[in-house]
Amino acid sequence: MRMRDPYHQALSALAGFAGEGRFGSGMPLVITSLAQELGLSPTPVREALARLAGEGVIEHWPGRGYFAPSLAATDVVELYDYHQRLVLWAVDLPTVASLERAERPEGSLAERLEQVFACVTARSGNRVLIRAHRLAAARLRPVRLVEAAAAPLEPEQVERLEGLLDASRGLEFRRALVRYHEDRMSASVNIANAMRRSGQSIE
Image 1 (tube, rainbow, N blue to C red):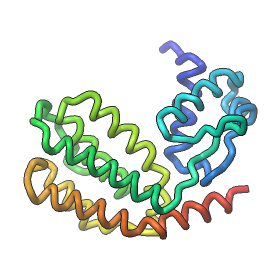
Image 2: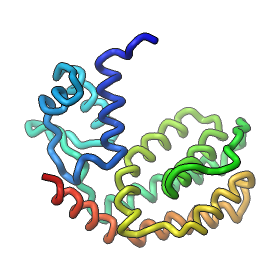
Image 3: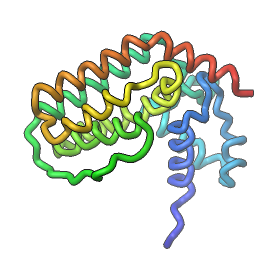
Image 4: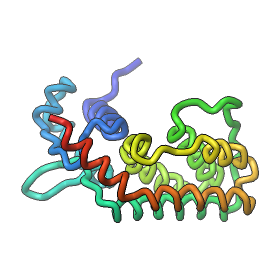
């Protein structure tokens, strides 16, 4: 198998680091250090960071460099509100794709929910919507890691959304979807504070 080019290696690795919550809130992302860790030259790392900044996964401050997002409670609310609107848009569109689901959902509760929402948007067949949702999910991933401790999900809430997925155009799914996002938005202060603490704890 042919190895991926350095840019895509850097992009995959850095997106993974961001999604795993490795970068603490507001943490500076030093290109030379990241390049050394990845065994790459600084150029593909810089290009990958620019791409991630353009997608909103990290932040670029002109003249200062790249940083992990430092999210306030209002930012968390806006991210969840945006995510909710994307999934509701998908629910309202005609279904053009039939996707099989694994009988036993795998992963954490947050990962299982991400599978539900990705499935709903994928069924719409709308490529712009699917891409927008993928980017929104990437931006929310570090938030979801922190909220597992700051504002834990109820397993019953996840199981309900999973159980209603096959009838995702129905009123009950919409209600469960809105309830999930409202719960997350109401916990935004705790989540933002936990993200700030996690960033301060990284040396």
